[in-house]
Image (tube, rainbow, N blue to C red):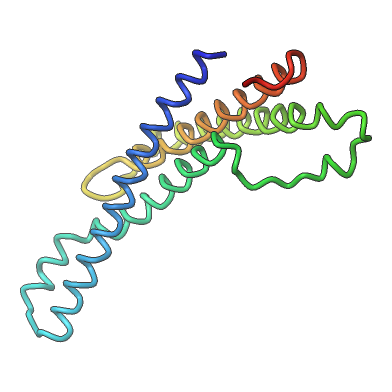
Length: 175
């Protein structure tokens, strides 16, 4: 269990690095686009239009980074057990089952993430077969790698939570 927690901490650090990098890129791209549009509109600098036509990849890349940030952020908050929870189980389960609720929820989420991972791999395969490109001649499937990666990260996090719930049930809370 300790090895899984160590892996989880390393993964969290890597995710945080990507989140910071991607968010910085998005802010930088957006600022540059606003600056260039302002120069074109108010400065009547027509060379800016030519420059912007060569930077048409920034907007689709920013949209793609939103998808990456969403999955990485979801994984981070799930790892900290601060994700959005719809807890209908508390109302449906009898009080004697209450200690098992966390495990049941983690198990359900793990199964759902495994199904989503499987579906996303199928989707990625079809994107690879079609061979379409996003921008800058980058294949579309490269940008869509976040789908199986994101679901894998979420599956890993819910799996760890489930294991921790089992340990808590049989050994009591860990220090």
